[in-house]
Image 1 (cartoon, helix red, strand yellow):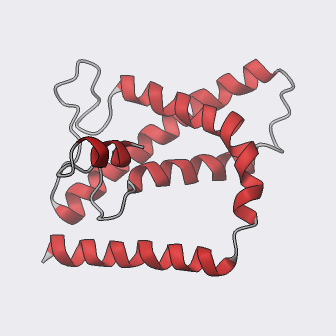
Image 2 (cartoon, one colour; image 1 turned 90 degrees about the horizontal axis):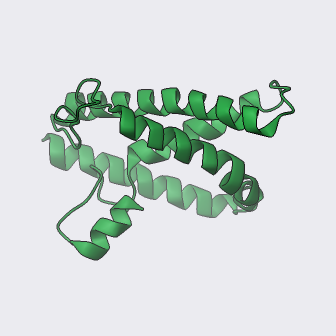
Amino acid sequence: MESTLYKITDVNNHSGIFYGPYTFVYGSGVLVSVIIYNFLDKRITIKNKVLKFFLYFILFTIVLSVVEYLGGVLLRFVFNVDLWNYSSHKDAIGKYVCLTNSFIWGLLGTLNIFFLYPGIKNFFVKIPRLYTFIIYLIVILDIISTIIVRKF
């Protein structure tokens, strides 16, 4: 969403490091959330939906903050760039994490898992393997070209 918004409002701006209209940290966060949910869903036997929602909210707040931190560190290490820096925020934890955004990531991750994911998970299973392969190929080529252009 952020990349698309930047493209609509300012063609020269982009929220990610890659050339495509996606942000690797966000995609990684969604993927990690889905993996964690699929692993824990059958193991957590809490019947109270509000308590279960709150438990996932706390879990995703922590996990997605770690993903954001690791993304920032990785971008600094590989490309020597900071795409975000929360140092000036009063609730910052270093450069790459702030509590306000951690809360937002936790909320978005939980809303995604409880409201969006149930409706679309069957859709993704039905995507033909050829299309999936083409998407993977595009992303891999984007990663390679980004590394070549930005690193050398």
